[in-house]
Length: 275
Image (cartoon, rainbow, N blue to C red; front, side, top):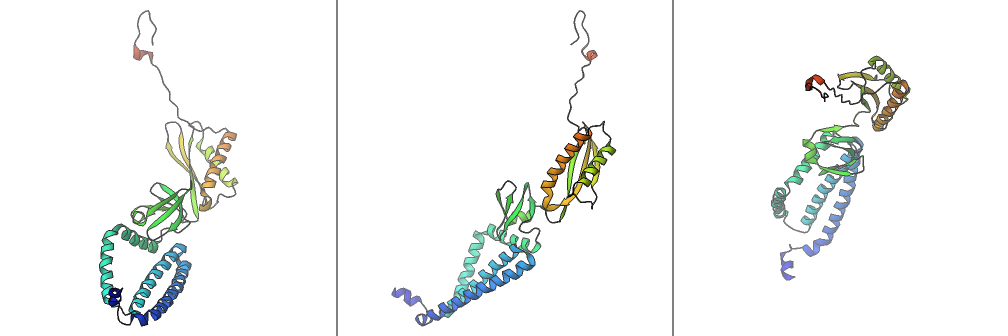
């Protein structure tokens, strides 16, 4: 204990109470300022950006509070800063992946390709953005699974924001039998779109004859709808089209395999049947 007391700076016993009060005041200031900064950023850039800025401001002000308190106790801050610099370099080499994710998170924060609550696609994963942090982004998939993506991976991957715009086009691929008239099919599909109160009239629905398939005509019918109702309306439109075609006698194309036998290819044998 005596050795420990000798290592303490002179005046430590007299200054520790004032240093404690000074540190408490700094912590209160850090709390108020971080909350204020977070609220201001949240109004302008969204909830996720506000939360991240609030944390960064809190960590920075707490670091300043610690340095100020240590100075009040009489410690030489230059020695502590030198030691902290060495430790920072060591930790930087040991946590390169985390540092890369933090930097990537700041880039995502500035670029803002998506917000919390958006539906996005990263690679083969589609889900709703549940949380955006400095190290990672968490998606909640449609089957209620939580998927975590490191920020560095997201920054290097193509991102499709499925809910960025208020409207989306629902493309429904169809295969129609060759015996059917494409003009009649187009008229039926346009009637289906006009009779659905949630399908938009502007922009106009589109009918595209895409290809001559091996079993039938390949067409795509596209209608515009609110992005928030995309999945539900896509299912409803497919079911309505099926009922309309059944009622109108329009036949879908289906895969067929036709095998023809040519007796001449096998030759003939006297007194026997041709296989």
